[in-house]
Length: 68
Image 1 (cartoon, one colour):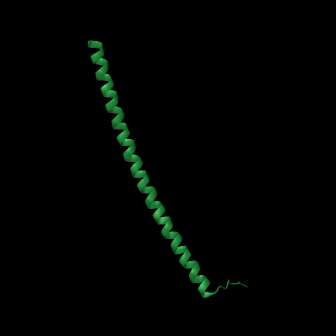
Image 2 (cartoon, helix red, strand yellow):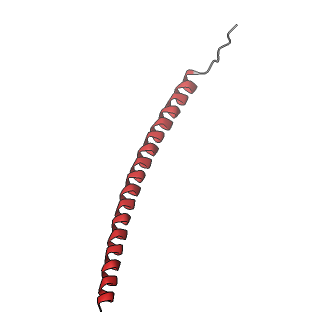
Image 3 (cartoon, helix red, strand yellow):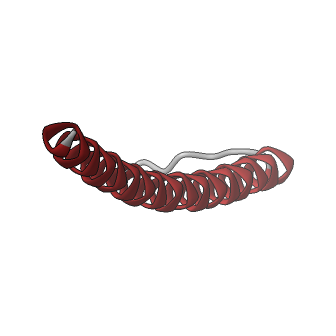
């Protein structure tokens, strides 16, 4: 025989509400992680550009030093 679980309607509604809130929070957390990943990617790209420019400047200074 299959025995069911009985809960009060109010308790059931509370649980459904809490589950809804948890889903909402998870959705917000995923969106936040996505934004952080995007920022990190842009930051990495920017740092790469700066590094390239510094190497270029370093090369030019080396060339100038060799000429002088």
